[in-house]
Structure formats: C-alpha cells, structure tokens
Amino acid sequence: MSGVLEERAAIEQEIAGRTVCEQLRWAAQEHPDAPAYSDPTGDGWTTLTYAEARERVLRIAAGYTALGLRPGDSVALMLVNRSEHVLADLGAVHAGGVPCSIYATFAPEQVAYVARDVGARIAVLGGPADLARWEPVLGELPALTKIILLEGAAPEGDERFLSWEAFLELGADALAADPAAVDARWQAVTPEDTLTVLYTSGTTGNPKGVPLTHTNVLFELVATQRMIDLPMRSTQISYLTYAHIAERVLSLYLPLVKVNHVHFCTDLANLGATLGQVHPVLFFGVPRVWEKMMARLQALLATQPPEQQENVRAAMAAGLAYVEGQQHGHTVTPEVREAYEQADAALLSIVRGLIGLDQARWCATAAAPMPEEVQRFFAGLGLKVIDVYGMTETTGAFTGNTPEVFKLGTVGRAEPGVEVRIAEDGEILTRSPLNTRGYLGLPEATAELLDDDGWLHTGDVGSIDEDGFVRIVDRKKELFITSGGENVSPAAIEGHLKEHPLIGQALAYGDRRPYPVAILTLDGEVAPEWARARGIAFDSLADLAAHPDVLKEIEAAVEAANRKLARVQQVKRWRLLPVEWTAETAELTPSLKLKRRVVHARYAEVIEELYTTG
Image (tube, rainbow, N blue to C red; front, side):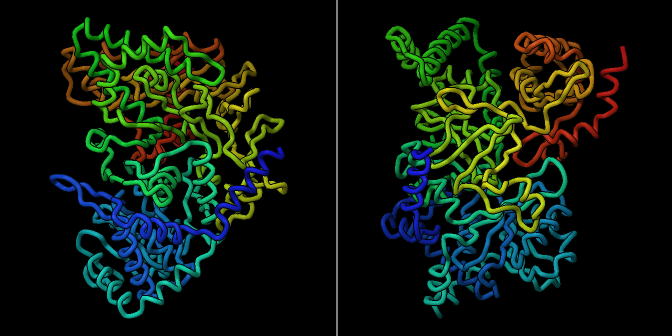
C-alpha cells in the first residue's frame, strides 16, 4: 500500500498547479509548428498547427465571453468529431466555462434533460441533423441564450441563433480589442475547477452528469504515461464521440501532453479508409469496432483460394503463439519467435498494413467485454489489442494492460497511484484522485457510488489474481440466477455467440428460468456479403434472417459457443430477429453497450415463447 501512496504523491506533485489551459499554452509555445488537428477534405486533409489551434481557441474564448458566458457557465456541444468540436470545447474552458458534449443519438427529450441539468447557456451544434434533435425542445430551455450553428440555416426569426463564421468574427474582434481579458479568464482557471461534465449513456433512467476536474484528467494522463511509454508527436484517429470518456481523454486531452497529430474521422463508415490513410501509432476501439474489423477480414479471407486461406491460418497460428508467449509469466521460445518472424515477414505485416495498423504501437479496447476469439484473432496478426478498464466516473481507465506487461482475458493491473480491491460480494472497488467527486445534483446516487472511505463502487463483479491482474465477470446487476440457483454471466455467453461473424448482437437470458436462451441479430455488413458469396438471393436483412442456410449457420454458431461454456451456461433455445440493434433504435447505448432492460421489455414475448413453445 505504501508504494501506491508514494506513486500517488509523486503524480500529484508533478501535476500540481497545472490545468489543461496551461498544457495547451505549453504545446503551442514549445511546438508551434507541430500539426495538431487534421480534418478530411475531398482530396486530402486541412491541418491546424498547435500555434494556430491555440490562437483560434483564444478567439473562441473571447467570443463566448462577448456572448455573456460567465465563469462556471456551461456550453453544450453536439458535433461530429472535427477540429471545431475540440476548439469549441477548449475555448469554453479558456473562458472559464464548462463544456459538455452530448450524445448525438439522444432523443430530443434526453437532450432537453441534459441541457437543463448541466445548465447550458450556449450550445454549439454541427448542422441540420443535430438541430433536428434540439429544435423540438428549444422552448423548454429558457436558460439557453445562444445557439451557434456550424453548418446549415437557422430557423427564421429566432435571434438566439448565430453562424459559426459570425461567432468567430465576434471572437476575433473581442480578442483584438482586449486580449488581456481573455488571458485573465484562462489564467483564473484552477486545477480543481470542473473541466467537463460527461453524461452516462444510461442503460436505465435518465443520464447522470459526471463532473471531472483538470486534476482528474491530468492525473489520468500522467498515470497512463508512467504505465505505458507513449511516444511524443504520434499520429492518432478521433472517431468515437467526445461524449465518451475514452475518446475525450485519448484524442482531446492526451494530445496536449504528447503533442500528437489528431486526424478526424467524421463518420464511422469511413474508419477503414481513414486507418488506411493515417496508419496511427495509437488506436483505441470499443469491442464492437474490433468485432466488425475482424468480421470484414474473415469475410475477405473466405473469398480467397483454399491454399491461400491455409497459408493465412498457419501464419496467424504463429502470430497467436508469439503474442500468447509474451504474456506476463510466459516465455517465448526460440522456435516460436522464429516461426513468428517468418510469418510476419511473409504475410502478417502485409495484412496489418492493409488495415492501417502496421505502425500501431498501442492498440486498446474497453467499455464492454471483448470476446476472447476477437482478441485472439488480432493476436494472430501480431497485434496486442490490450484491455483497459474504467468508467466515466473514474476519468476513464484505472486499470490496464500494457504492450510489455499483459495477460489476455484480463483488464490489466491498477494504474500507478490507484488502489483496487474486491468487496466481500465480489464487486470491484477503486480509490484514487481519478474518482469524480459525485454525480451532478444527485446526492443519493453519489452516496451509492462513493462510500465514506472514498472507495468508488463500480457495479462490476471481478477478481484479482496473484500478479495483480483484474478480471471482470459481469455487471453486478446483470448476473442472472437460474431456477436451479446458478449465478450466470450473460456477457460470457454473449461473447462466445458473437465470435461468429454473422452474429451482430446477442442477448442471453435466464433469470429464474431452467436454462439460458438467446436472442440474436445478424451483422448488417457481414451477412449480405456472406450470402452473396454463397449465391443466396435476398432483398433485405429480414429475408436473410429467415433463410434456411443462414439459420443452419447460426445453429452451428450456437453449438460452437455452447462447447466453450459450462452446462449451466449453455443456450438451449434461440431466436434470430429480422432487425439490427443500434443506438438509434435504442437497444444499444451510444457507446454500443447493450441496453438489457430495453431488449427485455421490447422482446418479452419472444423470450416467453422460447420457454413455452415446442
């Protein structure tokens, strides 16, 4: 314990007095010509340097101030990942305000709830699609004084609207007239001020606001750096929403410390092409991103001649053995190393280049359980896709594997300065300066989250092995108990089911029932390609979900999953739905986690039929 406290004290000393405002000033002063942010254009990229980015941030801060933003006031942001999102966010911070990125998949009533809850005075919206989520509820937001619209036309007659160009002009004039006023604003920001408020995507009820301070974020960045020696001036891609803590830490705050070059991918559908252009050094993806990447590669492999497929399988077996041998407590034999080097030179490095990950030194995943077969698939390509673990409430990761010290199937060890322990009921608890001070305006929820001794209750059930590596079983409230009294993790079942590329989503159910059942959906990208490769005619995904050949393949996938599960976990009956589950249709959160209660309610009759019909 003394070692953890010494590490904590050392990090606290290192970040003492620092703010994100000061960090941007340092980056712009020490590396003025370093590329900071690149937006895609029709024929390439438009790039801002760190000096240019800071000048624009100060201009934006002056604009907010001219619009009446006071220190502590909130600015709501709903834009895709682009430089303007980052600049509008940092500009709010430099004006003494509190930026809050809102999930672009939230329904209008959720948008209104968050805007009211955070007390938004100004909103910055990307364009017509974002405005469509706000317009129905603008009458419910009297505290919202200005809406800045990046693209598209504002509603006629509403004086609250201002174009982005007019806003920048306002800021430029205000900054030129009184630059000292802006300097005074950002210099008055303290480490314990709220840097941002993020809202939980919420599997039940209203989202909860999580205030995070400059100290929370800078402690996370320094602790991560002490754990993983991330290189300076790396390339990375920003594509997950800034309403998600992982993307915010990795591509909004980390670049200010490492002077990284961030390339924006404004549409997840373009991620593959962006990877091929950027070849990032750092890449983070939630499990669903890795699953889809694996499915596309497997579909491509299936179209190759049998001899080529066998060559790839042999090469990937060598890659898997090499990565598994590098795990903590394992050994890579000379034979394994030689086999990998040959496979890498002949094939694996080429495949990594094709998917844009040939330069990747740090690949990671979090936010939901990573299916074992997905992790093993990428290990076969020579890629260590390491698990980290955290929450919005812990400023992101508080445990993590590293490329040098890792165990597949775990979420790694506690970060420097972080305490982690397992409660008597199996819940994972953590205590460190990463923990939020509590939920915004929710004292009862805060009391459930943080106990009197400062331990944060994660709601996850897990264990810690003799080497300090943490394993997660499932969400504490998501374990179900069969009628036979067995505690079963639905995530474990679902992970094995989704190992088959045809299965896009899976929900396992069995609470107070004699055995588990599963509801499945097809992968909307892989299933059509799979069908075309086999000459199956179809007009829609629903057609495929009813096709005998597809059902036969899904049956084989369920049988394959059951062979990896204990008897009490095995799926006895299942149903393939004719639809996909998405954040837009509300079965998934914006961070692509399964909303179990929504699925349970929406498909209650299907679940009942799986137990009652022959």
